Image (cartoon, one colour):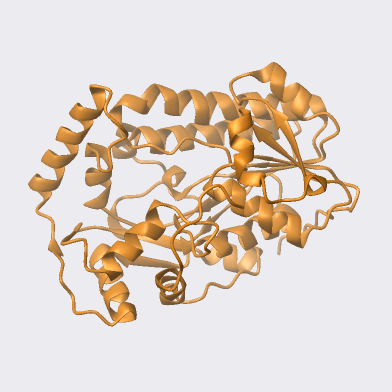
Length: 346
């Protein structure tokens, strides 16, 4: 039996969170600020003053903004001065063909820069918020876990390969002495008024009967608060260099739609998307995006992924981190009862 590990977060420990002006990072800031109660304000890495709008209702004594960028390593050296714990949630999430280079630059090179700065700065503990996108999957509905090899087909998805390579930067840091751990959440659904994302809006739209088609595949899903709890648990008890899959349930998209309809008390109104139709629509939207039009809602990569059943085994997180996951229908119920999203709030 593996010896128990404990990283004790002391009140004097200074925290830095990357990506705190975004959806997940903002929720992590709120959760850590509430549950760790450090003596000093949590430091947040922001790229510009506009990012601070998200913090405008929070007392200035509770957060410490520092301006920098994951791709500007000198700014990271400054940001990490005096920092004991790094929570790295900053990342680019995109499945558009036009963003492949940006995905590598932000998710891989940016993580490399932060790891290097953390090693030089003497950071005591580093938590990387990764993704099930970095976990190997056969895409056929079989359960993948933290040891499943990354597959060749996944290397053709820009976001997946960027998250996969980012984990190599974490492990390289571990080999050089960084006390780093990772968690790998599935698709995250924001279930609070202040923390909503596109997945939240998808549930709301399904519940209103606004989406007539569902993809033929499936995915591992998890509520936002479960991810925050997993992050805190991993920070304190994960062994250096380990990672944990964080999902509540594996659902086919049809099952997801049916759960939403049942929770909303609505009759099922959606049909499966023919694969050729979905891929053609994705290619068309990618082509339009290359012309400089706004970020596409669907892409060839998203449609290709939605045809696969990407299911994961969360047993390790339940055993090692003592996590429990409520039925995902409870998350759906919370989402359907939410008021309209409030922007720029933590």
